[in-house]
Image 1 (cartoon, rainbow, N blue to C red):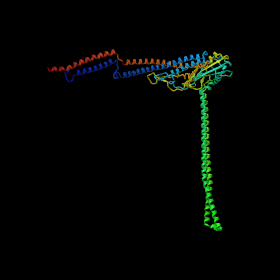
Image 2: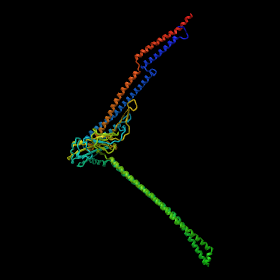
Image 3: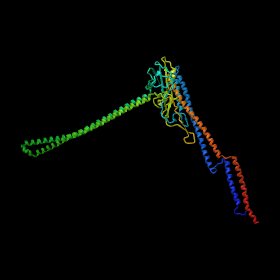
Image 4: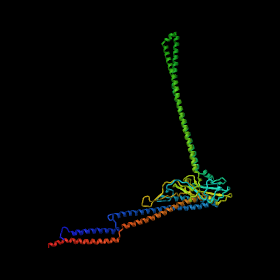
Length: 603
């Protein structure tokens, strides 16, 4: 090997090796210090991208799990409110059963009524429970739906029972007669808007379920404030329509009278002017005639002959004036006649035109009155029709109604049954409960009959129209991976315990208390249905949370396999690179010493 001093290639090559060892040592140090074998895209471009996506997935899954846990917390708040309502309803039924017992006086029932009222007020407080400022079970978080009617279905009566079936012919499900006699009395009680109505139907050979219900609707029709309001509105509409007609008629008559007066005044004014002109011309002619006659007589008395008088200038002057004034009078008289005829034509035309306008106004006013009266009558008919509390379904099919989502609702076993429905959709016409009670001629309750006839249960719940306000819980890492939760209305009005005007379910009499028992059974069923829905959603959310946790763990394990460093292996690699680094440094020192050997040649 040549001895050179300018380029020490051994040192250069050793330096290159030293740099490589230093780079390898730095990478090993980074892996050992971070615990990851991939610290940047330069270490493993595809592996880095895949592991970063996995990290995003882990964080997304963790957030989805947090959302799910928050959803569980929200549902537990709603569940607590509904559970409290169920407890209250349970107590209320106990109180209603107590009030139905005639061992209580009216004063006792009044005391029980106070407890009932307070319980209903607490149910409204429960419905207003909030989570993070959101009210949950007051009906504001319902899914989109149409207004629905209450349906009460009886599957204990024979499946061929119709609305036209006679009461005395009613049979149970097995086809056995209920043995209702014409000497029995049927009491039908029902609750609408918190108000209890009751009616005793005398059973005869022709009494049917339809006719019994029509009779039972009488106290509702007579006492219902909405019905009275409908008639009051009808009377007000009629009065307003008649007032409008009379006003229009008066205005048209007054306008016509004014037109006649104006036309007559115009006619009289024009005629009076021409008449004054004619009279003035007549007066002037008479004056000139008198002057002529005076001049003629004076000339005659002066001894003038007729021929001389005819030649007399003074007499001729007066004669000329008289002749001229006669001509003026003749013209004025002619003008008066034509002007009078023309003015009369204008007057008559104006009066005729005004009469046409008046008659047209009369016709329009009568037409408006007719339409208004017809509309008022139609509105009354529609209102009264909607306010009839229920109608008996004459179908013997298995369809009991339409749900808020528009789905057809069938009987539980898909067999034919008889259904009583409210007269119109919405809470305003909700049939909270209906009770049938048959007593024999001695006033004894026929329990075996009532166990069948009174077995009407709510098959379709009444709802108002609702917008899409359901709660959305994002429980996945992708768009639209949500669970929609619609919470129904748990207010006392929605449960059929209170009216929009504040009337509460009454237990003041034995009949009211007896009817209240069925109402509370329906309310409890509503609350239990909501509680079931909430519980099933809670269970689903818990399963969803468990699945998200497992998914997060598995993705994190995959990311760990791809990115986490094997510390034992990396420490071995680090030690190796450290030793190589030290060896390269030593060799570089030796290589740098080789150039100094050239100096020995100078000795």
